[in-house]
Length: 171
Image (cartoon, rainbow, N blue to C red; front, side, top):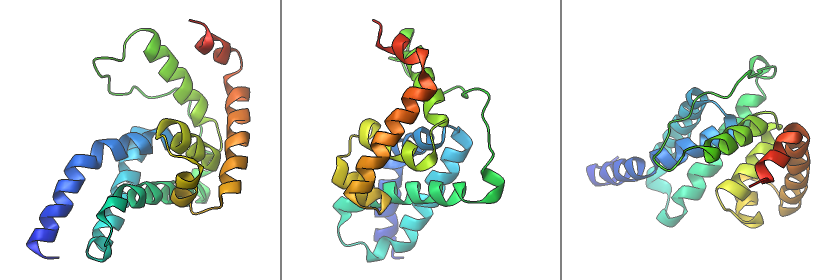
């Protein structure tokens, strides 16, 4: 890769690494795995950097790579029965205090118990703000699959959260 292209990649990486890592964390619920997923996505992007013509589509490419890496990882037999007893601490920002921390913790705990594809749809749709079409592109599936996985994911999240969901809604 030429020096100018390498510099452009380095600038993109520096600007987007934290956002990609947060997305990966929302998908998997583990900061170490999130680092691995983000790294996998950026390595894939680096390999194809010269071939990507539409630089406006970089976020979508990286997002799709993170989702694909997560789904591929969950298919590995040694990852299938991975249970989490408690949600790891998240890096706190200035605006995350009090009730918002409790809400976030409950949501992350619930998401960790939702099946991976459904979790990916919920994170992309509701936390990343993608529409049905954008989520379908990121997950390499049909819009109908996104809609059904969204419905199933929300049902699973409601089942997992149970009483905690009522607590989240109460002001």
